[in-house]
Image (tube, rainbow, N blue to C red; front, side, top):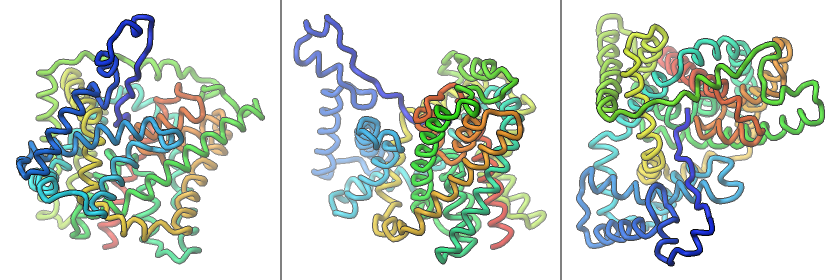
Length: 452
């Protein structure tokens, strides 16, 4: 899934020399806003917070997280090295958490954000839009053909990652169940928006803990896994240059034509705001369907299948069997793009402020923890390499795409493929991330329900 904004850059032409200072400032963007407007809006919001005039509701909450999210997301996209390892997510999650740790957030700001995130349940709304839109928005050709080509390396890679991760975790004294559910699964769950967040909802219904409180336990592994996947992609690129017989130069299957999938994925969709309204209702209905079926299954058969998992199943079945008109799918996809483009980093800010205590995160970041995370990704990439070789795929490309299963969603796919200079593999990366991640979330949650 692509759940981050594309960075807007200033292009200088001869006409720029004729612009005055203010016009040049207006060309500098913070998120979607020109710099002077961002500074003005931020000053108003900060002044309202300082003088306790910030509305303690959704309006005030959105103002706080969007002001911070636009800035921190953009900084994360600009800082060298950091921008290539999930910088926007790291900045948006941990800088607000640091502010709370240092006591720099006043009560007015925290009350507004708490109302938005907890009382108004913005987190669940975000998840509903992303799950419905990302699945319904996939081109069916990409979904079916891409999965057929990637199924074996993806499955073998996932099993290898689980086995190796749990064994390495045991070597460092980690409980196998904890290693699997809280280290391995977050890495291969498909990112934060489409993976960690629905996973936390499923875990919360089974464990009886707050879903948001579980996020701080799941996110560190996902971020470390993303960094390792990017490093592995760079290594694979160099290996392909040294050993040309392993290198497909961006082609995955030796006898296949990948261009049709790339063309299908890049198909332009018309934006219709009325259809986005339909998409909003569709997303909410999928979430409510999950809650409804969860209750019915629990009452009738004693089956504790979490609602978010049912929601993912429902969206996948609707897409595969084409049960919705294409216009409705497009509307849901456009809503997803709007939400993911504008509200991903603000949501991360809200999570960082309320649910990512730095002392807890620091406690898990041991040498053993990092080694376990690295072993999961290495096992995934290695399995993709050798299985691809057996299946008449180019091993370098197969390894890179399989490694995308351990990236941070759409932004992770972009970072991994950029590091390997193989952006043409995006359709397969999306299969690895979205379908592999959704399957991981479903299976892990069902297993947790069976063993708890």
